[in-house]
Image (cartoon, rainbow, N blue to C red):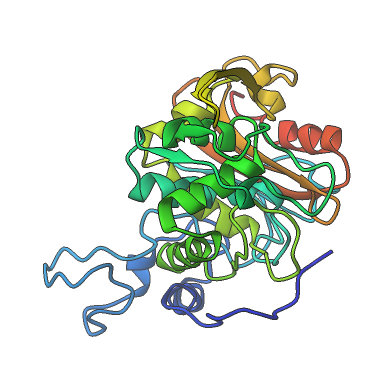
Length: 330
């Protein structure tokens, strides 16, 4: 199911204006560098920061930008509602399908939760889990079984968030960093606008379904790319499991092993020889269906971000993502 435009606060942004200008001037549908679309008589338009340095840095100069579907490789994402496959090093768009359609993200939301937490947080700082953080009003919610009064570090909560896709960890992080989930969500939406993800609107830090909680495949690419600036983000995503020890409310020690929700990371789904599945974030709800944002690396060290949203089944999701990889080392 696709989301409506309800709740969108930022219909026209600096990013979208710059993109439209670039497309008009260049007529491109694949890799675009926005500095090629601007001239010196447009000072300030599309520029990051307030620097008057003549070496101007444009918003999207290091981004892949596309305005329409692209199929530069043999790949099959026919089941997905939206999909993309980008070469981060050459800025080539190898595959793009409905990348600006607003869709439900499920737990891929947690990419932004991690980004905001890493931007603001001391990884060794501790917090006490609240009752609200572990209270859910629907069944089958993914958690790491945190309880009110448990004391964990931000680092431990991030492992729960990104390895096991735990919704209780997401809520605890939000309360830890902003005082409440509502205030943390405001930070998430603010950060989305800052990085150009203006077709995104969050209402919670975990990705549980809400009609006003949506994003796009392209916006998730922007979020993942931004989160990659933090070494901790990829370090956590690479782990197939995480052994944790923390203190419960009664002072006893709790030990557990949290397992990755990502079948590439666990080795349950293979990749071609010479290709590495570096790490990624899964997401699944009945409304969002099966989703995944994944970083790959080829034998030459070039990196690729793949995003698939809205696959009917998890096995189909991984099959379609595998189809992006078949030509990487040919």
